[in-house]
Image (cartoon, rainbow, N blue to C red; front, side, top):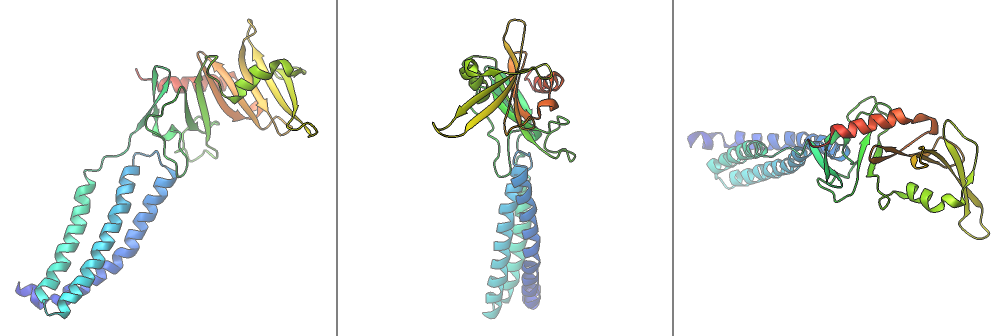
Length: 282
């Protein structure tokens, strides 16, 4: 007790110094944790980042309270109380937040996705998320979406990937289709055939949104099997073949993604199918 009384001013000064130093430290922790959580919302570390941001607020509040309360106690001649406030509050804030953090569980390494009754465990770096939008852990869906770099089939942690895009997987069922396949099935009879291109049969769909409005043209490129069933469909727009939506049937699944007409083929489709197959729950 004698030390607390004799060193009261020193403890109060330390209380203010600790608080001043903690402000930039806590702000840096919040900034780093917030950046990681925003741009990598599927990362298992996101739960710890969330805790770190909350703990930083607690430490700042505790530090401010310790500095102000100890100063008031010292002014009122409660010297031992002033010293004790700094010691107890800072010890509790630092040790307590670390102890509680040790009980925080990280987020999932895999996200469960479904195609009908089949279950796939998608690694977090392929999970369908975007900055500020975390993935749902168990979405209610017939197929599922995942994100990757189409050039090397790596996930969002690959530093060489310049563009992450979504790939959709759907079962090969007539009552389940995305807008591209639905448009083909609905307007196929209204399309005009064109010349073959790179193994594709080409078709044009012309329409106007208004009666006297300009005519729009959608370019379709299709591959059919010996039975006349669709196995690959590419829809291009903007008057060229660089902005296209691909739909490829591999086994029992349709794969959908965006790429140039010449940038995708059956080899890429097979690689995507193999990647998805590796996620199947055994």
